Every structure is written in structure tokens, then in C-alpha cells.
Image (cartoon, rainbow, N blue to C red):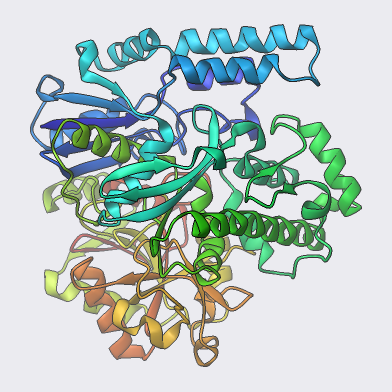
Length: 592
């Protein structure tokens, strides 16, 4: 049984740009962003890659033709060999009827406004959402016309849930899925018991009251790109305590005793939100440029998000007696919130996958379709699912840059030791090894690494290498068996995907300053010999040499670009920055 899952629309950027003004700062406010493909063979996830890594357009919504072809080629098969194509969206008649009702039942809209909105929905449905449109999109971008029964459409939130469920090992669990919007809803909760999914329908939140979209409006208000830069707001929040009383909880979000909530305006009502935020925070356009004002709004927004999702979790606790909870969807990338939700709940464990945001729905759609067809998923938890390159391919790329770099080939056993020796000092290296990781976090195969003991290393990497804001923190990677010595893990015993933030123990805060945020926390990645042998060996060598038990690990890219995929990508990025050295497989690369 061969299933190819995918996410992405060929016409999304054009349709949403023209009809819904999703351009400029709002360019990512569309369906199909983070397009990707994933291949499942006989229940095993064998390959997955994001389209952005191949077409080099960050957060692209394009039809994932390149990603699909790479997945198939990596397995030595073609489109003709695939039994099922699983698309991570399902715009059923019931869903579309609800989208229509959302417009017609809007009492604040005039008749003319309703007709205009219905017209835009009709055009979008015809171009993107309908069965005919998805079939035409597939044919146009692949040259392949699957039989109608082979193209399975999977509800978006179900795809999210299946990603988290299977990547956490399966088994009974409660769940919360929350993102900007799926087809019509923005949040669902329920439980998976004995393999059966039960959604608590009375706890669903429609997209009109999307918490994630409200957080995106705050992101835009503070001058960042919505549906892309929310992590910057999360990082800014660490610079100050939230104001009391909290303007968001007093004047913006209406929380209800049952854990549901309402927000005052749809997310596209940007002028109304700006006016409201200026009024309740005492701000204006000039204030929004001031660091202290941004911190005050960001900390209030972060606290609001934590409070509202905690209300959902409290309700989930009363509705399910299961000890574990799965949290998926774009909102689950707020790793500061994840840790607090777990520690303040009765749940003994929480799982957030490396594909929690929309990058993961291609995986979830494929796993859902595989299971429905009678082939139960047999899933490894490894995120290293993308392309890899052999020595010959690396050498070919090096020769293209022979006028700018020099290199020498190391014995494979010497690579971790050489890198560890270099990073004893204030040295920043590019680390390009093995199969590319999947998801928004660099997890040690396409990473920039550095020694966290230097107080100024964060500023060096932000300014000279990543070309990004100075307030942005960096994450540490640590051997799993040492993590509890350095960090206060609480209920967690591991954090392999950088999806949880934990306090740094007081005795280590000065020792790893570069990987410790201003609020004395870190978004950690834990590594074992089994999960990433080469990275584990590097950490062992570095710890023995320096006594420092972790390294800074940040994504191998510069601001605005996707994480590097190929050796040529890595060399191009290396030469655009002030990185000191680059490890391309077994090759140590330096500038001329």
C-alpha cells in the first residue's frame, strides 16, 4: 500500500492575493501555506519534505510538485505506483454550507457586503476548493490524472491530529488541535481511545473566533509578518511581565466557563483591531515602534494565549480521564505555552510533534488514508525524512565555489572531534549532515552551532550570521541523559523536537548564557545516540573538552530564507554570513 500525502494549492497565492489582499505583510494569510509531501509505504513513513526547501520560497503555498517528485524518486517509484493520494483539506458540502452561513448570518454586514463576500467565496471554491479544482490542480502540476477514487480528501484538523497521534507512538490520548483555521473551524478537542477518534463537538471553535488568528493580528500590530513571525512575539514577551489587569482579557477575549471563547472581530478587521489595541494599551503608530511598548503588548498577548488555552485544557481534563494529551496545530508551536499547559494540568504527559504546524498535515493525511485502507501505520519518531547527499555530490558543489572556499576531507570518526575543538572558542559553524530534518526547527542535520558560554555569542549570531533582531533567543541542544542536570524539566523527560521551553537551573545560567533567554528559560532539544548518533558524539566530545553540556543550535539559514537543503544551498548561505567554518558531511570548509 503506497500513499502520497500532500498540502498546497497551485492558485492559492494568486486567488488570495487578488480577492483577499493576501500580499505584502499579509502574504501568508492563505490556505495551503507550508506546502509539503510525505510518502507512506505499507504503513511506514519513508520520506517527507517541504516544498520551500526545494523551490527556496519560504512558507510557500505552491502545489508541492517538487516535494512529491523527490519523495517518489527517493523510493524508486512513480506516480503510477501510488495507490492513494491524500490531500490535507476536505471542503465537503456541509463545510461549504457552513462557510456560506457564516457570511449570510453576519448581522453586522450589509446586503452588498454579503453579496461581495459570497462572490469571493464562489470564485475561491471554483478555483481551489471543489473536487474538480483539486483534480485539475493535481493534473496541471504533475501531469498525472489519478482515478477519482485514488484522490482522498482528509479534513485538515484530522490530518493534524493523525500527525501528532502517530508520531507520538499512538495509544490512547486526549487531544487539542488549534490553528488559524482549517476548512471552517479553528480548534477541536476530544480523545482517541482504542484507535477511535471522538471529537467533542460542543467544544469546537469556528474560524471567526480563532485564537491563533487573533495572535497573528497582534503580530501584525507589532510590525511583524502574521502567520510567520508569531514566535517573535513569544520571544519579546520574555522581556517583561504582563500588565495587570490584562487588556486582552479585559477588553478583547470573552472567556466562557465551559472553556470556549469569543473574540470581537474577524481577523481581517485589521483597522478595528488596531483602534481597539491602541485604545486599551494607550498606544499609537509611534508607540508600536518602541521596544518597551512592544514588550508590554507581547507579554499581554502571550499571557492571554496561555490563559485561554489553559481554559480549554481544564475542560478537556473534565471530559477525558486519559493521562496523556496531544497538542497539534500552529498554536502548538508556542512552546512557552506548551510547557505551562502541561505543568499546570493533571495530564502526566504532553506530546507536540515536529510537524505540529501545517508542515505536518501531509504526513497526517497520508497516515490517515493508509489506516483507512487497512494498513495500520508503523511509525518511527525520527524527523530526519528529507534529502541526503553523498560525498560525490558534496564535492561537485564545492567545485562550483572553488574560487571562494577551501576544504579538506576528514576521516568520518574525526568530524565530531574537529568540530568540538573549533567550538571551544567563539567559533560559529555550519553543520550539514545526513538526511534533512522535517518541520520548522533545525534538529541537528541542517544547523548552525556554537558554544553558548560566551555572553556576546547571541549578538554575534543574530547580527553577523542570521541577520535578524537582537532580542531573538537561541535554543540549546543537549544529551538527553544530561538534560535534567541543566534544565528544570518538570513532567518532561525529553524534548527531541524543540517544542517545549523549560527553566535553566540557576547554576548553569552563566555557563550557557548564549542559550539562555532573558527570562532564564530555554527551548531545548534533547538528543540520544539512537535519535542522532553523529550529533550525540559531537555533544559528548564538546562536553568532555569544555565542561559545557550543550551547544547553541539554530537553523541553517538567514532571515527570510528557508533552511538549507542541498550542499549548494549550504555553501551559498555560508558565504552570505560570517560563519567561521562549515562541515559539509566529512568536509571541513573555510573561506579563502
